[in-house]
Image (cartoon, rainbow, N blue to C red; front, side, top):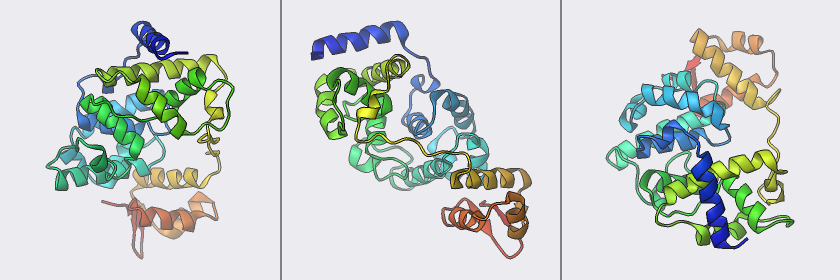
Length: 266
């Protein structure tokens, strides 16, 4: 498929099938940061409801920066990958301390924020500032592999990036990436997953029975019960990996521990 044909297909699809999300309305850099971090490894349907609650509770960077980990986790609960909640808080703290309460407008500074890698930084530039950044994520990868690398295997993101750049609508990158995302999501329902042809492809590890699930159970219990002795919580979890999970959660700043109890960090 040539570039003109490709662009026409994407725009035609978007014109008839564009999706409606809260983060595509009343756009601010902060709201884009929140939505992009939430969408990392999480289905859109799960993010949609949590995003509105999160923005209502923490409407801007200073509010989020001042919030306690416990307050943030209470809202985040149910989304999974809880590290992202603390990354958002730390990113907010950094933005307030170093950038006057605003998100940077260049890639080099954005990638220094906790939880913001090169692709999330590119997405923020495109969606928040409508700048022609080049980035890749699951739906974008799927779309380009399907149309430009049919039948090939072990395709690297480095191979995709020049094609993404060549096909980019530099005059309106925000809507172009929305269109790519919507088309890629649709494509995932009608063809065998092209992302299996990617070097980056890896099956997600099972959640059931994982250490990640145990960590989530500990946090959920402490959200409800506030504080309990480490020995009692270990007994309740009925899992020999509890000491490891507890040490990780303390080290990462989720929970605090003293001689008498463990509890969510204030």
